Structures are given as structure tokens and as C-alpha cells.
Image 1 (tube, one colour):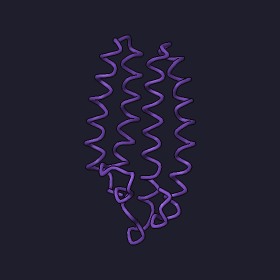
Image 2 (cartoon, rainbow, N blue to C red):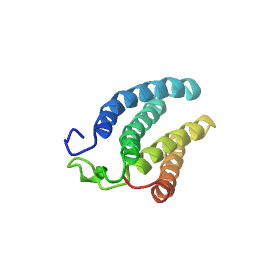
Image 3 (tube, rainbow, N blue to C red):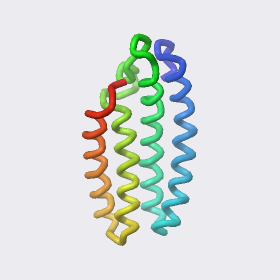
Amino acid sequence: MSEGSFHESVVAADRWSKALALVVAILAFLAVREVVVDVQVASIVAAIAGIGVRLYVPYHASVRVPESERKPLAEHPTAGTYHHGAAGIALVVASLAVTGVFGLGHGFITAIGVGVMSGGVAYVVSSSALPTA
């Protein structure tokens, strides 16, 4: 996002989102490991939550830019054409679902399956509810 054509607040949010995603991933790992006592699940949940935060923060900054000055995130050469905000929210929802289902005593595959399904539903709902950036 270091392109000069993007609003400076979006570029700054993109830089900050990297550090924030790392902090979220570390905190999620520590918290989930305490709850479910499984390092593998905690690692997966932490990675998913960190990536979700990394996607959502620049989207949020982009939406706050006035529409006349806004350039869509999808126009960046390294960004995909999906809804970045919805993807970020969906990944965080999926990580919470995996933690909840595994914490209730269900198996690893069941927890991942529920996480994928809930993340998919969250993406569909969020992409239709959130504005495009």
C-alpha cells in the first residue's frame, strides 16, 4: 500500500496493521492456549485472527476517507478483488468459532469445520452489509 495514489491515512493504517496483527496473534495464542490447552489449535486460531486484523484495519481506514479522495483497495497491484473488510471480519469470527467449539470438547476437525462455515457465513453477511472500499 505504499503507492502514492492512496490516501496517507490508508498507507499509515496499512503499516500499523502489520504490528497490530502481530500483537493480536500473540495475545490470541496466549489466551486460546490457556482456554483449550492445545498448542496446535491456539496456533491456528492466532494466525487466523492476526490475518483478519491485518485485512480489516486498512479497509477501515479506507472507508473513513471521503469518497471523492478514496481509491479502492482492489486497485492496488498486490490486493485481491475480494471485500477486504468482510474477509477480515470473517477470519476473526472463524477464529472465535474454532476456539468455542474446540473449547466445548469437540474434536479438531469439527472445530475447523464449524470455523470455516461460520467464517463463510460472516463473509457473505459482512460483504453485503459493509460499504466497499
